[in-house]
Image (cartoon, rainbow, N blue to C red; front, side, top):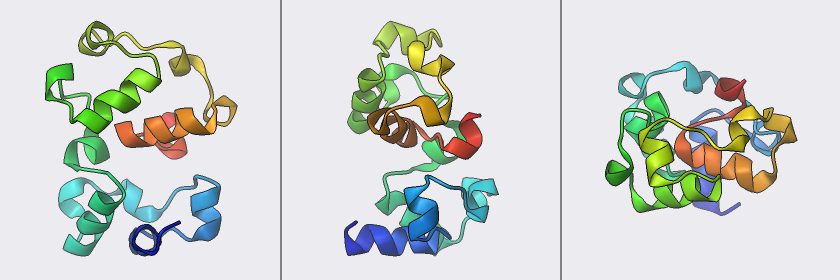
Length: 118
């Protein structure tokens, strides 16, 4: 993991073990506005923004999603119509541990973790 990402993960309370196990940290219980400025910056470094952190982008239409979020959603099988009408692809029916690493990474981009998925 690049040093900047490792530092960001540590700021959010993750260590090598919890990161590799896709574990949970206490800061994930916080709303975006409750994060310190350092925690927000760390979250941004890892690709999170307020909408991903608090709402898993559920409050955004497809057209409002950043490009990297649309790409992650497409890799999971979402289409614009599916996203806008809350029609989940088959990944919705999988447990976190049954998913591929790429599916888990894409869901991370959408704001999901093992902790808030199941």
